[in-house]
Image (cartoon, rainbow, N blue to C red):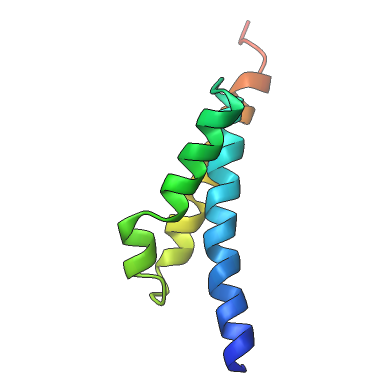
Length: 81
């Protein structure tokens, strides 16, 4: 891959981490300003920036998406009878 493609990939991973954190925080009831701040804080947090080139960062970037999906699943689940 070219250097520009690699840079775009790394930036998209960070943006995805921030976006998924924003969506999760909005789902659990945070205000829009708080969700934007939380997404930006997670996106620019130390471990995500320092270990950006590491392969395991894919899991860290997708963790908010997993939390969002679990929360949506638990909210839509009908009670057992």
